[in-house]
Image (tube, one colour):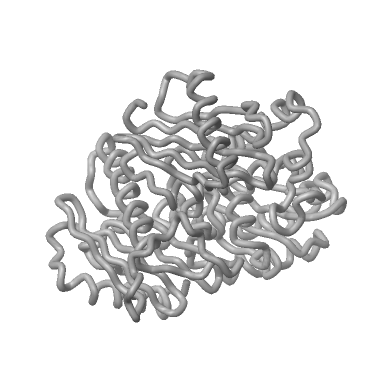
Length: 418
């Protein structure tokens, strides 16, 4: 495989018929013989009562995952940061994207393969968005990407009034695919469902309004709901998840201007914090380059790899630098969650192939960890409600990272609550 390339395959589990193949970083497609070999070795292992989940070659990692004994997803990655945890979560995101847009029934009971292939084309944009790097972390953490703004009370009150007038309980305001404010019942959806809805809105071409049928992978996988989205300003959308009512025409003609025009300035302020995810006045330590903060109680995360807005970097270098920081932060999160910060999954069981038995034999579990490399230093901290992952400059003394992390946690729990 080419360096830093990813291939994603979707096949029927029973017959191995390819449904689609998506790729990143490669100009060529996989040959049918390679696809057949990847599926064949998995089927052979299954026939011998062996569960084949992943394997590695010199420069490539391969992961298999079968869903509902119907869909087999295979991913091959030669990226340096690829891991069993990240690739398994990629496959979960891909399958749930398919459920979100075409429903579980057509995926479990495949009656016409050619028709299913055609229907799955509607999923390509969303699936591709999970293959490429973005400013968001929710695909890896399975939490909801959020932003902190100063005008939360005003925007929350406006959203509540808007959803009440629309006779809808599920509403959300997004900036760049990240949640600014949402109704109480929107937060009651599973974190993965909210994450998928945010990624869907961000992956679609900009439009003044949309009426999009969606299935909820956990809450309603066989009965569709309507996702209504309205662009308030470019990059900021208000969304409703509803049934047959209200009509999109009524909301657009009667409610959008009435409720959202008076708060145009707070809406535009969301764009100013979209990339950093929190206001420029948040006083982070000067040695911090990147931050990932996860609220485990509310299933949401805050992420930034440009912690200091005044940072002076040439525009030609900035994009590459931020990508490198993001990759380092994702890699450290994966390491920490695989080896040190083991957590109970919502369904009450742990994934055997994404968590290592590193702590076997120890009477305690880690609450802090760090790594040091030639490019960055990383520090992780686990509290009762939060997980914090920091990316530091190399000149920051190793002994001081714990103190800086503790002050950062305090900052986001008291001064700027998250």
